[in-house]
View (cartoon, one colour):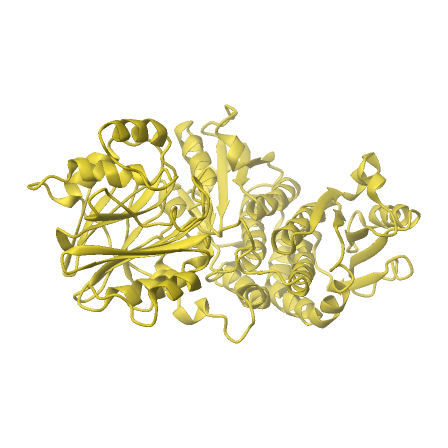
Length: 610
């Protein structure tokens, strides 16, 4: 949450950081601001609303200066107003600071600073940081030392960037709990919370670790800990192409990313399928087969869409690998004294690799002796660096806030891990080959589903004026019902709930009338006939049924008001196909309701605060 970008070099800084900020707007869009160091002063510009409002504030001529920091906000402390927008300044106007995170002891610090004469202008927790730096920033003390001293007094999480009129070519950056990197150019350097902000200028980045602080100048950068002990860091080359972060002719990132799923699933599987052996090659696990055989229990943890993928993974793992598996909300995991030990494998799922709750859950699992794996999409992310091993999704950049292609890649990745674990145990080579062949066909089957987009678009008209929608599925497709409901809620603001279809008659059936649309995920799988019976129950009460069915299956031909057909595949892979029309349905409904599908209200792409 929140986007940070900074630049120091020879070029005009304001335009560069504004350009980078636009690529980070998916991380927060409540307000935005920038500060430019020029001619012995720090000029700050802020605006409530999206970055376009900040552009309007700047006017046609960006302010001069060769060092700048900028921020796009997802509000935590304080309403999304201009006064609460970042950067924040000290009393004398010589410092500017941007911050992602939460300062938990801000109230105590604010009271003490006020008593010492500091004047606060905003409601934010962030402002205490810049006043702490101001107190320590004496005439003979460099900015990096003052920032380090201030950070030693705070409790909570932060990713910050600070500039001063006294050191006009320096940016000080630091992180604890919120991602930050230094990007290396020629005669210029950047800081950013996400590599997407700087890919137009450099692919060479240094990821800051927990407790790191960096002093960044045009021709140099130093990274140290808060005790000023310098650290050697590896430079990573980012392999994402800038073109993949553009809409490419599509009206929204979300529909672009939905349509990319044949390729994103193919990239997830590429080079990993071993048909002859009936298994997979997963080079990043960093756990031997012998150690995997010692695993007696698996815990999968994640948030939101990733949690839904994890639930599918639980069903896969227990059916094919016969390993007891649980799925935990990451936000609850570390607060309930979880039972994990050295025989437990904890799998954290996060598209960004920065989700604060998932990261905290994995750290708690490691503290208790468990092995940890990360299923993430972003190379170099914090989770990727801290787990024992992992599997990259290789889905490519996902900019739309509502996750689509990352979800289907997560399911495919969980299938790979399941196949690996299953083949080490009871799964026969013939069964393994069957799964491998089905996985290999999956990208083409996804393309077949996407070809039905015009049909889904027509069905979406039926939901535009709905106020409540029920999503029902069983077995592998119960988590898909949860995900379909979440997508509709996220981007169209229509209330929707997902349930196991059999649970409908234990309460939710009371809601059903002739105004209630009910979406059934009803492919021809092991529980197909049971779902058909549940459809009968809905129709008996006048409900309007939209059904996801297997091609050629006529069981719901007369019962469903609308049918969307998907190709046949193995039961465990059906969620990859059944999720796609639900993504399209949510998208088309939201567009017709005039919603901002890429930047839905109150949401941000990467939740890096607890």
